Image (tube, rainbow, N blue to C red):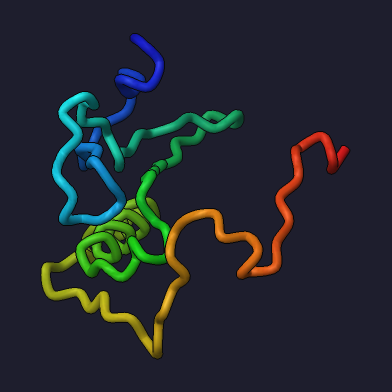
Length: 123
């Protein structure tokens, strides 16, 4: 397996993502980049031998979560992870409660008053 091009054999991909030429959903696909898994699951054995259900997604920025489909994927994954598949229905409400105006993705540190530091600064 070449790093970055595949999942380990014990993982199951749920969603594949095609990289785009830019950062907008309407941007065209980047023909130089391969689609990659962006949401997957696996069963993991804990150190005590118990099974644990694991879900992972590379999606989930503040603006990503404005998408009802992604919210549904994450909520369904939480139910699955807790063994509550019977609670998953097509009509499950995934509406945002209250107002939700996330900051745009990116590194506008000055605007949010954050100064990034290398990991070595915290040792």
